[in-house]
Image (cartoon, rainbow, N blue to C red):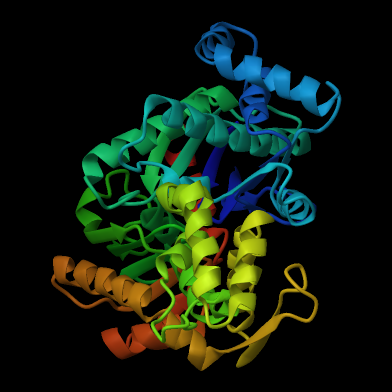
Length: 454
């Protein structure tokens, strides 16, 4: 069976064709999208999970041979933690969040591993680990789909951003695609192709057009923003070669996660001492606070978790005019609540799409701890990443050499009225239409998969 697979930074979705229509498969209850999260009782158990779920054959043997040391550590972890062979060791999606919120100190939690793909300076063991993370998530999603369908899914088109990182893009893109390909093969896909995510979103939208248009497709994902200027409509929809119809495309590593981090930094981290003063009247250093919440940067999180940061915070507590705020920061770090804080920021962003004010409750840190955020306050805090997104849109229009007839928005953050207002002010009086913010990419990937594999 053929599918379109949106392995997203924030959420994953899988689509199948049913006649002329596309059906997104429920992956978690009735939800057709699964948050891109994983919680493991021990980090090495991720690799063990992958090995156990690879079909018996040369692929499994090669994998086991390449991961012998990690698999030995996984067995040791099982003995030390008294984990039975029948115990569940990995949790995905909303269940991963639940386990992390309940046991933040005990296991290994990761959100949005796609954000790390293509990062520079990764050693071989890092690349192996990211292959295993992605493979475990793909295996889980593929198994969920197959359990519902009762048939094997063998061919897929996977979405990709224009650029995974934006630094040394050709090299980083190749590395990221190699990781996704290796993971997809270990998940059991026999044939894998890739398609730009904004183009996929546009293909889904094109099937609904009744006349030809030049469309600016804007896909604001969790990790990247991708834009494409595309001629589309009834005269184009059946064409096999669409190269000449894509007039311009841009993409950069700035997305919904960056908005969440800015919201967390500007509105929530002051509760932990950010922007407070030292006894000598100087401001508190802020880099350690940004490191805590920059959850899409491996080096920032590693620095925050390092002993040097612990020593720095201990010293700043002695120097702080309000040491109780630094005590709160120390407790947050010790109990590994930084991902929870960024999740709070994401929830605030979502809530402020429908309301003008939102109260963030942080009882997991301290009883009664909360913070109010307004839509105007959110707009001010996200100005730097939003400006980058707007520039990507304008660059795509400039490449095309013409104005769009309409703008088609997809991706979770595209729902924000703050972002939509900013687009209208920058681009002008061009109609802005919405797609399925979580499913349009998967649907377009499915349309393309049917076209190339049939």
